[in-house]
Image (cartoon, rainbow, N blue to C red; front, side):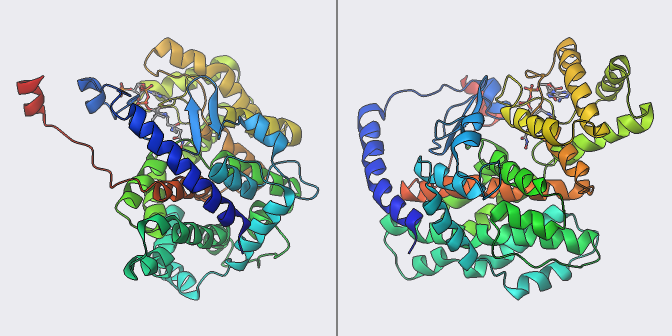
Length: 431
Ligand code: HAX
């Protein structure tokens, strides 16, 4: 039995009634108007999606079910001896809006453990791929390969009722999430550690077990990965990975199709891949200017990047207009464990300089750092130096948020997504 599934079974009908009432009372009210500029401009600022799990305030940053990152770090259950919240507890919060008890988290962890075994054909698929395949491609393919396991597809083919759709979507999500840290660590060890693998430890949690299978010995790395997965999990539903997952799932595609597609969006350099680009930028700067460049040198280096027509990775955001609290949380972790690390110091120096440069340039609406400006430097400190792999870790975390979102999409029976498009010709004639 699953305590989380039972809880959702209680919550979903009540929330469904709330949504029905909102639609009856406010269904015809205007939420957002769309300008021609927004239609050409990536729909920035257009309010046209509903996301139950999280809300992104431009100034304050993300809240999961109303809770800020500092609040979650305080109140969500932790692993024995750990100081950072368990991502499993975050998934519970995202799905239910409630902070789980230790017992509830244990129940969910038992569910994950029961679903942990990765089918052997996934390993064969990964081994069959070209050696220089990007790890994100491997990750996406591994997820897609398991589509044949979908319980949603089975139920759908057997004529399951619409009101029940969320149940196999939940089960598919558990079955997939349980395997993701194992698949990710496998890709890492296959590609970068001579294909020598470390078996999963059944005693460990989602983040702790991933850290263990990566082969990083520092005990606090387990806590880093718990924090990392939680921070990267949800950022409401308009970002490329979450929106892709929602869009693909809206065609009643199952969780494997939907999450695999989301990972392909996350793999773009303006989205999740920015974390590998960011550390590359810092290391290239250190290489060129020596270990501890002055602020003036960092400033010149930043201008050189901009003048060569490139973006400064890790800075700017489509919604945020302040330093990303996910950056702050990682910075706090770094201050505690690796304040003297030269890369950490350079990330800090970049923070002290780059916002001023971007403000002077006057193009980026948000000159402040996002989550990706910090994550790579902490991985690098703990010896995970293969940048290409960083977005896979982001992908493991992001999967927690997007699966929670689409379970709710199914619970509310949201329809297939199909916005209307127009041509330039149409705009010229009609606007
Ligand atoms: N460096 C240089 N120029 C930047 C910039 C940066 N960091 N951020 C924005 N700009 C530029 C844009 O390229 C754009 O220029 P053009 O008018 O010439 O096209 C202009 O400023 C206005 O852009 P914006 O409205 O402020 O930003 P967008 O909403 O269009 O884009 C991005 C948001 C995050 C894609 C953008 O800030 C960027 O490219 N940042 C660097 C890459 C990055 O860090 N991506 C990760 C974002 C977080 C995330 O999704 N993680 O997964």
